[in-house]
Image (spheres, helix red, strand yellow):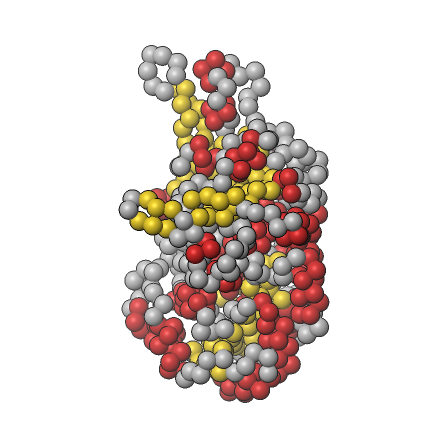
Length: 571
């Protein structure tokens, strides 16, 4: 991927029982992905519909290595026909597909992370030729990684693999024609198919029904990546899951939350579980509070029609921030296998208290003038219904009722049209008991406590705030930072989250995708307060565009003797 100078083409394999000394973990790969001496990405293979595959030919001493892209296996023998992966982006003409999915696929291709035999299809209602699709895609492709190879040549090679099929989402005819075209491209190879549903949630089921019936692989695996939102509450989410499972097995459904693919979120478990200095401190005994902060410095900007139906709690808190919280607070999993990690996430989600209205503050940005420039209110967006009370800001205090975290407030804050763009995790530790320097520190909480900050975006960084003596003859203390700034420490480009998640989906790696019981547990926390907000028609507190948000958020934190970390410092 983009973070490495090595070039490889991943192939899914059965590893030999005896570990080869030439096979080593590679730093950007998932725990199951390995790089052999020949540069291939090696992984435990999955069979049709995402289930673990059983080798058709094995001896008493070893399994034969089978490579997904049809190249030679470890013993040098060519595979019978080989395999191919067909990636269909449903909703190909939408913004997400154009700005994120196609560029991520090209980045994987540029880094030789896609199989040798692959095809990309766009599917949408718009009438479009193959060439028109390629022209549309080419506008958003960039060789942002490096200039190791000629960018225009790589683009041309990638675009030749891209094709288009027009059709309705709720009719099988279009998908039947797609199936015919896919079979032409897959001729003579084991067909594996991945569908990315870059479409509104109200047509998920229509597409899955039509595609699964007419365009599933007959002999390889078929998988569907489903974008959030996964419903609006427990009831609608459960109904969506039941509807999808009429046509798919759970193993075929990859519920994507792109924040789980971000570098710093992936590094969260590494930081905790592989550093002795942190793991013993990861509990109520040493941590005073944890803050999960998400802010954008722009408003809905024409997306108000979509946003107004969900609001900031459903759009950001219930998925992005809650998923990060679950990874942060979970117990040590048995292994790094996907199911072991997801089991621990479900346990911690089920331990969380249901949110009460008293533990939530909601806000909505209003118009504001600054520096001679006027900024519109949320309700000024022409796509937003007049008089809307949908929150564009929310803060909440979440508690986990288990032995590790009892009494520790987890504070979430998310908002649009705020003073800065950031996403970060802030861990504030308890004061030092009987601190010898309390006279120098006084009652200033910021100086009395250490703070660990993981900045997810922008400018990825991990830093630890410590108390330090200011050089000089006197005894004056200062809050200083031990700072790991990724752009300075790691010179190569950090891969986009969609690159990692697309590659994982193709390889059947589910660690960063959301399981149905995990989704149920997440909605159970938020559904009661969401219903109460809507039934009571709670009016959001107004805050100026470009401000730090509503005052009520500060009172909420103060209830737990907490000060928002991003207020005390803009680091």
